[in-house]
Length: 248
Image (cartoon, rainbow, N blue to C red):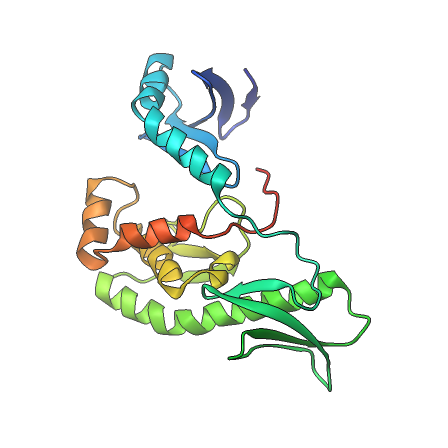
């Protein structure tokens, strides 16, 4: 068993059956179970005073679900490492594009063409890393363009207002919400998925401003305002993961 202690939390790793479970003891009221990408790491966030018996019961009761989630991650398609060369496959809003490099006649740019090409205009000596930064900036702009339409609609529909909504690359979550500060973050990778996926994540995080926990009230709000949210979630989880070998 591994222990990491500090002022905020204590982390332990226990083995239950044939599954290693990371226990994250925190100053919280409820138990939260997660199976994390890309390899199905199991994390159980628990109140500081949770007994070993309650921990084992929480895992055993969800054993079949955990096994399925881990198997789904193992079998999920992954993109290869991006080399940023001609003909390489990239995704935008669920559609596959082939990268086409052209000489820049002025400012560097990225353009998604109707013929299935993602045209990257750069100089010949641009590094792969800088090409990727340009594409990621393009993804960020695409998300921001869509959010300008979606955020006002959903804030009005739900009767909530986020103080800020930011986009960043995240390793273990599609989105997150700081309920107290009303700050929401969305994963940059969502630009590669169909638009209904990012809309689901946006609504999911906005609903947290009404209900902090993933409880029955949370699910009932989701059911009321987005009846097909489970189908959207399943679609998101079935699509190729990013090429990164995520560690966390």
